[in-house]
Length: 187
Image 1: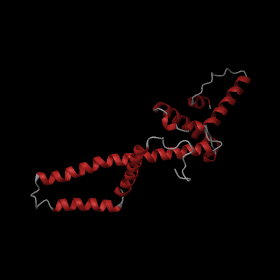
Image 2 (image 1 turned 90 degrees about the horizontal axis):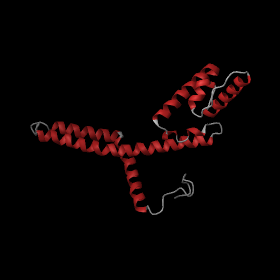
Image 3 (image 1 turned 45 degrees about the vertical axis):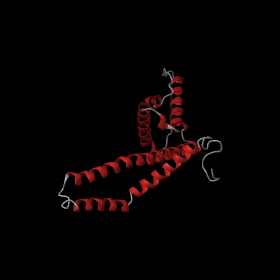
Image 4 (image 1 turned 30 degrees about the horizontal axis):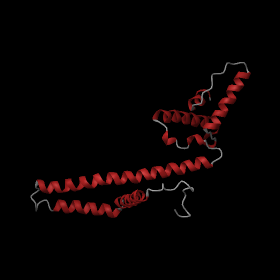
């Protein structure tokens, strides 16, 4: 690991996984390079040239089934392999983006740390958060447009303060809940 590595000490590669890690690293580098090159203008021109050459050779082979099978087999194999290469690159990019966002959330004093690793929530929990953030957007719109900001923690504090104010005025307060839906219900 180099001095400029963003990996904190003690969290590097597992010991004893040298050959496995080396193979994964090589595949990762190959997948990244392949997807970058596959999306280049050169790759498009090359693919177009192959299709044009295949089409031109059609009359020479009498448009036979073998002639058709060549392009079908070739494109199927290329597509099949590219699916795995592209998926590997997208997985790596997604993890990198999540880590960058987690770092931003963790480093910002007023950001809610509850959103770090939000990608691990199930679909229902994500839907609840979507509803909550839509509600926060509505609050910001009513208060001061896009200049107003809210976080989950701030919303909970506001909710608790409102609940306490209601209780002190003699109104019966609802029982507290720890989920984001509570903040949306009474905010």
